[in-house]
Length: 498
Image (tube, rainbow, N blue to C red):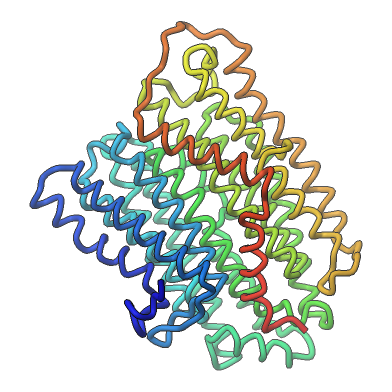
């Protein structure tokens, strides 16, 4: 179907239109209908329609712009698909979760749609200011959604920490943008990339601006040392929202790194000291982030906090892209982001399903789960082993692509510069297997207090099965998505590669 015949000059933002409509009407639907099931159904239908429209545009190879602000191509289309999957998975379970039943349904869904809208706004933008606006729309909506879990001191603490840390990151980001604008006279990323190529050496003020922006957006992806908010927020928030933040919001932050820093420096990385300096900066951040995330996760007894630190480590893995700065590395990073949605999303969904069944959040509460809920125990084992990189699951395939990207330079030739980073990543994957195995040991080897069968809501089972299929299929048939990732990487970096 030709989308331009329906949406005309606004085709580039067609997937966003349905989210805007949902965010605007859902509070009214809840107010007038006073039925949370109707509100949920309307939201889910609009989310699915948005995803279908985007898939049609992506598979047709549509490229276009709208309002002089948004540019749709293979890169933005792929990330919009990722955010749509996260949104649909979250909406599937939100109406069945005991953690969200006390929320004002209309307001809750409106905030989630607004947050997703901000993510899509970011990946369609090519200017520092419009990207900033998208990030803030997602952040402010997330702050409000986390705080909706009333009468829970953990949620209140999480919301306060989230707002305070988010405010700091916003201030740092704006400071960095102002410094770079003052030096270059532009906030357009393509113009900035051209300007950076003319610099003979690193400028102190430019260095300050880059560091401020890296720190500001580093909070969004929970990169070390800007990660301390993540475990508290993931633990305190309703579990569907924790899944949304870990799989959606964090991917938006990583996309910001790709769209700004990767585009700005990829063309000069092989010929300029400035580019090489930025590469080593990100390599160090990646190595520290994955190491701290995995080591601290070992000591966690709360499974949501363990998954939070695991997310920190996963962000470290994906930051390898920023060190290598090649098209293949970006393709691999995008593919790992996709597999992470199903691995980490599935794990959080199982935690949320078990909370609905009265099971606690401590790892010790999972003792004997294999007898009480054999399917959930098996699914959790597969998700955790996939996160650890055990073949033939999706996590192994995406990590193989990502880690192997360190061996190839921008020209595709073998380059040993980043072998040390690949070694650290492989070592960290081995470390992660220890704390994932703790959960598997509790479920399959340790005995629980009772053997009563556990029943979980059907929507959770549907969402978990979707994630399970994703983890298995992308492990054995990665080309299903990896081809799209290669097209996306070419769309983003192609114009800037020397």
